[in-house]
Image: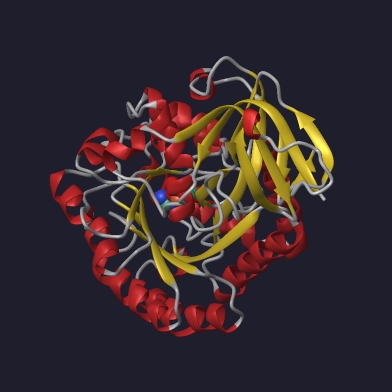
Length: 418
Ligand code: NIG
Ligand code: FE
């Protein structure tokens, strides 16, 4: 019993032989079938092809169709994979938004006790139940915008109790929502006020208490450190990652947002799955990434919101690197989880081609969260996470029409969500 989508104007990002990621020149293309069908069964993608090859309805047909959608004039995409978010948080920070407009920088706001520490204060006063409710609204919102898999970080707790509270909320979201969720422990997001004059003690707390507690409840797959000027040094980062590695936590690093911080080098050296942000990236960092398995992940929403220099996406792609894109959905630097807008920003500001942006929000971002064998493309056996657009002229129209909601139908795990 399955769902047949027929007369699809364009089926985007199709793979007969699924690849883990797409790099360099290959990023400017993907397989595409016009006038296509797609068949989903038991939550998986079972078959696809051109309408002229759609088997008839004879009794022995391999398709037992229980539901059918006519997608005339419309495109089908694999759901977005958003490999970097902080969407579990309490409240919002629009007062700092106004401070930024008046001229303060992100770092100046952080130094005054705003920024991450402001969100940490709010989160500590919020119950687990309330935090879940606020965060689940954001999950509903990103589902409606086409996201089918999301990575969520802790990092606004900054005490053992509150970091565990965040990670339990992430686990509950994973258990109760139809999106695929990956969880990252980010105790090293900022040094809390109470450790300002003794940062080593906070790093010790992460290493000696937080990491073992997180691991013993199996609350995270990944470990992150904000390895940047004013936050954590490469040496502190290495200590934290080494401890995490002992518990099987794979690194995904915040790197090179505010400075040439050594974050990229530290991430690659410690076999990070991804290094993210990269606004301050030059030839040396690109060289270090070449030949590694680490996915450079760009977050153009936060560069846009904070007015940071744009990361050098073109140089990366021309050097043969893969590039992933993610939203960084968080209250301080990117209060949006809109992956379609992320694609538009990548095209407009980073000069990525529409095809490169589409590869970067699907297969490459799936890789950056360890999911590219099950998500990120239309391939037989992969999880049936797709969306159907409204009637549009071409797939390029998606990043081009940057302010329009062009999604008509969302399907997650083979079920229509609306
Ligand atoms: O990815 N750069 C560090 N962390 C977040 C911002 C978090 C915040 O400001 O609340 C980011 O931009
Ligand atoms: Fe982030």
